[in-house]
Length: 541
Image (cartoon, rainbow, N blue to C red; front, side, top):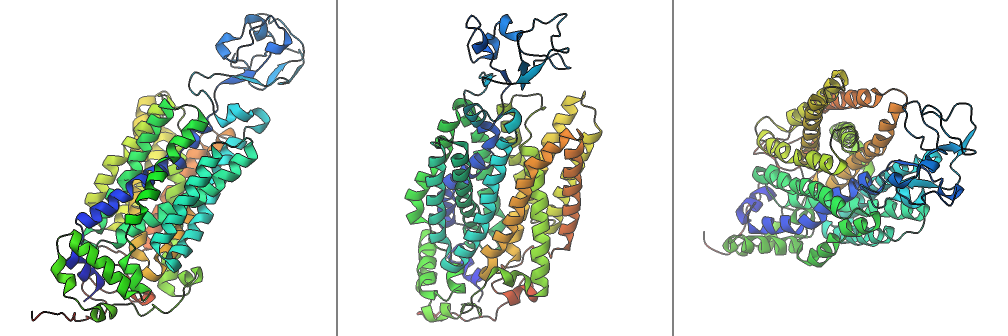
């Protein structure tokens, strides 16, 4: 008997799994609130030089609307007729015919900047004047945060495979909450960026382990259901971020607000079960028996496991249980090497496309809060669509199809004139939903491709490739300084090519999770696999 068969007997999707999903709810809601937080805490409001100090009679308000006409005379106009954001006249010069720049000498802002606080009461940009010569720093903060996620993916991939899912999950909770809250009280940009780096490393562990833990507690028939349900927490957190950012529009309180739910996660960690599948893969049959017994009782099936002898369960332990594995084992055998490389490419393409769309909230015809909410809301029907399709047309077709269609949507918007903003908005929303559909698929798919003994390391490597894509996404958006359409061209090409590359992966529909490297190199069929192990029981049945 295989482990999946035992899991079906003790209940593969019952109250036990529902409680596990609820326990993972608060930490998974925190993820999008932090991953996309930069859209709000690092927003750059309209600004121009503060010239109120030049003449005490001028309005000294830090509100753009309050700058008096006398102050306006000290700020040159650009070609579009709007005040320049980074230059001021060296000496006051009254404009003639609406243009006072002419040959009058200008200089950089000498006394700081005036910001429009009508949308954001404060951001890290207004806190530390990250504009003009320092305008690259807000996006740099985002990139450094995602580099922390990348390194955290490697760290927690190794830790959870070597020491277990549950203790590694607690470590990720503590790391995230400590550095997340500390970043809200940073008194310098450098300190803030360093704290966000370590917060990202901790959040990477939550992202990896929570999803894998849920998947390993369900059998093949319910795996897609569990993974899609878990991923809905992301969409919920994504929509919640729009509401929280609107209600708490100062950056320090907003960070505290989106980090606070992790306190609940720490308190409920005691009820999180260890993965019985991981325990068996590491020769811990007695502890696995204990958790399976809890699962059977919670699912109202106590008779089955109480009748199973521990010795019989011990024979289900995987053949690789006494071996130690490193990241290098992902590339030592032919099929596993191909899987690792192709999933890495697919994760990179999915991430750079998803975040390339998600981090670009301007030019949508709506304010940033509503744009964030609409982008998040479209993810729900996208996930429900994937729930239907992954068990009908397979994981490979879903992943490749959604990525190619995302690239197609981006390509269409390259050709549609900007005057047709309604059409562009509809296509952009559709592309955002498809990009999320590819993310949901690739999480489930990756878990099914790697064996239990290397699953977290494989998912960790894939997440590293993803975080490289995420780190690149803000830089791709900066390419519009060279050519307005260049970011869309790059995202379109990336999504399409990486989607086609995913066709090189093996299909995993209706196949049990591989336990060993041998299961990957010689994958069992739907009913093949490990040698059947008769379960000795205490009754006469």
